[in-house]
Image (cartoon, rainbow, N blue to C red; front, side, top):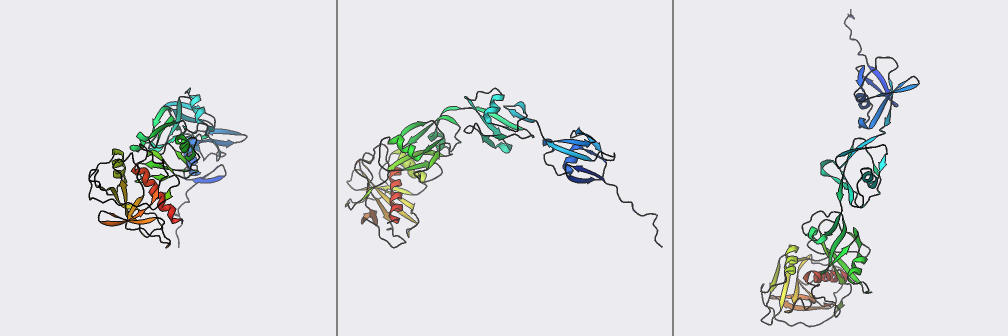
Length: 390
């Protein structure tokens, strides 16, 4: 016969409703914060809790204890926070507005909005910079937000920041280098058309624009409709090249002397070293022979059988006053499409037979003091891409 004198009693639970969600707890006494947690409400500090009584509501603080054992105490509702606390430059501020703009936040803290801009500090040193969006709507958060103000810089030299890949701060004026000249620009963005106008304000000729960045071994060609963010990290400078060059079949019969035997301007050496590719300077200015730059492992655009080649550039004794003309490749390039390449000839260089691409600037397009090996290689890449479309 079963003994029922020791049967286990069912544990008592206490029920409550928070908004429309029913919860059960094992203890009658519970804090306001615990009620919200049981109801699955995140960020309890962002809500105000009310106990629903007959014809009235009683506010319950987060650390206040409610006894669910008392009849009529089990109904609760919440409201979103009505007041938002935040810091500006370490000073506490309060607002009942759900959204504020950076300008409003600074004005409420008596900050000169013409001299300063607003930055929001996030976790782990992350920031949101509102320098260029002063009227953006910022949703205020009840957990507290941190803002600081920073003074606008009068002028920032893009080249100096780009060479070190430093973050470019907001400024009233950005100084940019286009070819050999510097220009002051009063906006964060500049279009390719505006870059061309800086150098050629009244020209109807067609040009191509390249940007140099510290993280790329090659200049980056920009689209005609493209605009550049001058605060782009590692941006250094720009170069502008005539869009069209002519093909030709001029002969070159200089003898070639081996190895690296002449000096280049410092900017050419810096550029070639920055490519990260092996290069040589062979020949000299006194023997009457040819002087050549050999750039090995040069990347060839997709569409040719060759992925890499050595590109040779003939350097005149009077360079950089005299232009660099044409380009020479080893091994010879051939298209995957099987189509021919215009204006080719053979050229002996350094004991090998190079493929000469006869491509020439129009008279007067070489700009001494502006054009150099870097700008000529921009043209060479353009020739390679252009010929694929023929």
